[in-house]
Image (cartoon, rainbow, N blue to C red; front, side, top):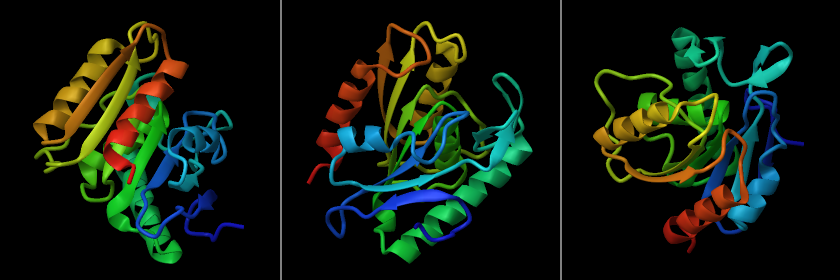
Length: 209
């Protein structure tokens, strides 16, 4: 049973003391178990830290509130981003994780709060894999993300996230100094085998010992 650190969560220790840990952040309606099989495929040997979002939208867990489709409650987003950052710090201390080797893997709403964490709480994440992300918030000033590696994958025909929004996020992260690798899929919002294959290749190049 995982310790109570502010979120219901799944934890699995990394195979080696200083191996990376994936912070798994599910999409709307998901839970802390959803992305664990994906982590097992993408990064065997990595640790797993997978919280369940605490905001409910019509009974479906999310990581922050939205006012309507694609319109975020920015005040709540700031609060929830700080809350997630505190959870990551507490979990790293409690479980003995290397805080410099925590990489987010988020889908949709989870990818958006991962991007918000990069932008609002720099230093929390060593990198991120963002599936179907858009601009969550534009901080002023931009953080210093030099050396932070980010993988982004979006769908060209995604009805929920226009391609222009994904392109804006890419530009914003690069302006902050992040190293952003972008892949485009021919489909929509759902993940595909190509998403996973491309993300795994990126992971192996950057994080495999």
